[in-house]
Length: 65
Image (cartoon, rainbow, N blue to C red):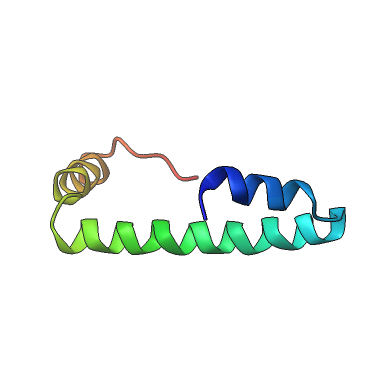
């Protein structure tokens, strides 16, 4: 099934089913993002940002939220 077929199928759904699908997709997409973030952390791809944040905090360049 290609994207156009999926779009066509979604367009034929009643509004309540579109809402149900949207909720499911939001959770599905969030899980993909979480998995990618975990992999990036394990691979050390965020180490430089973490170091910068720690340096900002230790030097007093941070403000409470």
